[in-house]
Image (cartoon, rainbow, N blue to C red; front, side, top):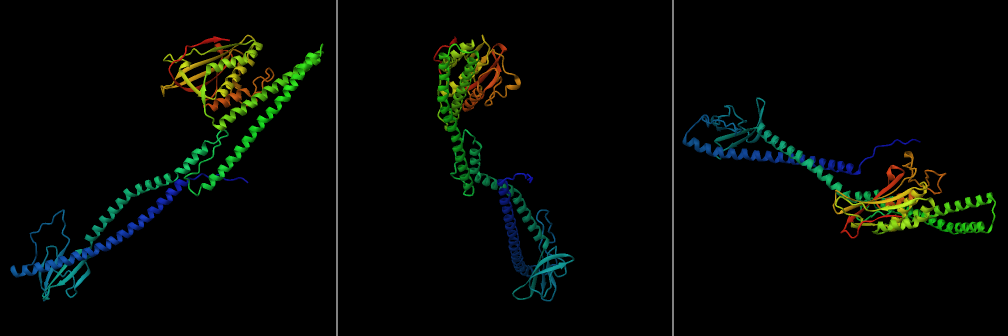
Length: 487
């Protein structure tokens, strides 16, 4: 049954949105409670201010009447300020219902019923006011103070706008804070993801589960168990390859020795029998080379899996040793071997000024396979040249790069096959060579083990083919003169 692919979702983003939604809801609820509580308390404060104002005005009005007498309007010379608007209005009535005193903004009609004392709400011509009616101690004078409801509404609106502006500023900061907290909480998960991302057949290290959330610890434990099973399977495969190769070497060596002995003891030989023996010997030699290369491949994989410490490399002596091992092969193929390590960098520093580290056995295996391959695919009278060049780096002046190239002037490799030559068991010319197709695959494994890769380039004088790779090192003080030798 076809499964519909769904777009992935982010747990971190979902948690961020959910937590921020919770914060937003709690903030809205608390803001509403604060607003309504502040509204209630402000109404009480306004009422208290009206009552205190009424008491003060009543006291002042009593003395004013005794000194001045009756007055119609208080503050007739008052000019309203554009900044401080006058909201309160008052009236002073006597016990007979006569208006004795009023503010400039108060009408002549009562602001509130004269027979009702205390607080009240009045609606006069569509304008709602809050009033306070107070009698003096002798119950002769009555003062009425009124405040329009719009005054209180303006103050509440200002408070609401301020709260809203504060929310607009604070909520984005809250979102960023929630996102930062969630990201920090996912830090251990991110470290585990980075560890898992580095896993491959050469790096099967367990994922560290220290300081990880309890919710994902079972998942990581299951992953580590799977890694252990993979490690065991890879180890069994390598042991099988090594054991099979070792087991096959001895009987093949015996078969080869018996055939060679049979050739010496049986004379004269028939042409058919001689050809059969030669073909058998060639088959045994091919099997022996394949076994040796399988052992070398297993060894290089083992070094990568163990992450063994690197050692100091001596490229010059390594190439000389390789030439000594391949001299007989080169003489049989009538191919000359040349080593050139006289190249210097822009500051005239040579190979003797470079310190390289790696796996000496693996590097020797790499160079030998490249040289052996160049000899095998060359033509009689051809040449195989190993060149070592020292290069400086622009990023770090203390770092050096050593480029090692193995070139020949043979028939070369077709362009359409150059991308396939590093595949295991691939042979460019299977009918013309006796190789197993593992040599360059082993070279690729060793190069990757040293953090580099092998590139295809031109051969000697633009003919044949060349294979080159680079190793990183550090510059040291010059210690020896350059050499140029031909073997």
